[in-house]
Length: 358
Image (cartoon, rainbow, N blue to C red):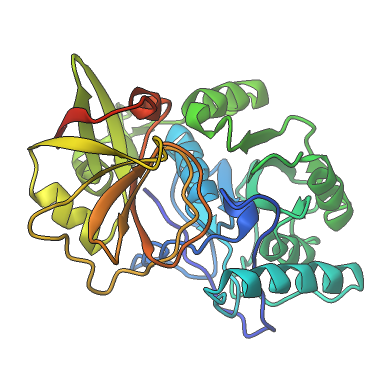
């Protein structure tokens, strides 16, 4: 994946946080670490990709990030994460309070600080802007980014996508149009809620088709021949392919995308595994106990799981695959997510025998 470099700006503190339901980014779930910056590129300008689209996103959990990555992969384009200047408090109630305070401050014209900036958007035809919905509004980091870059986005087409528990996207669309009055904020939006996130890939594909956004996946070489672009070459996607896991139940196989952390990699290193997932708490979770316990050293905890999330419950050291949404817990470590609607195969009563493979 091509990740844009960002410029740290020493502004005031920005943050995120949450709202609404406790099962998604509206709830201010802690975020996974960002991908490290890549060397050898100009940090003041987004670079590479097909140079027509930029995926711009902020994400507290990896929910919006997952959607952003799916869009980036579909288009083979640049991607940039908008980050707050100050890290968020892991305490759930503190995050809620901070989100409310920041939204109130924005209404008074005071935008919390972020550490992300772009010199210009000259080479992009369309900016795809993604964010979680907090208390019905666009997440505060993205509001600050659009406010700070309004003049640079003048005349650009902006397509909005968002994630939420159940809130709508209409308020945030109005906010985007107000923040970027001279940009062309498109009416074709994408909203993925807790009930539709499992169909993310199909929804993303349909949305991009409606936008007329198409992947440019071939480049010309010196002889004028077309060759696959870097991001479509399987040899250049080691990180993406190595962080996937097959889950076979009976004669059906489902895919899971694993986190880039030590615990997830430890589990992947032990595959294949034939295990029995025990039913826990009336099919809220399916659990098993790795032996020895997975390595969680240096892995940040904190998660508000949604159906399909693969986690570790630190006090018991068991792996828990959530079949239902649950409230935020600092004792949960997210290590992956079952793609698409695969979790439905586990949303049945009783223990289930499965095979885990790379």
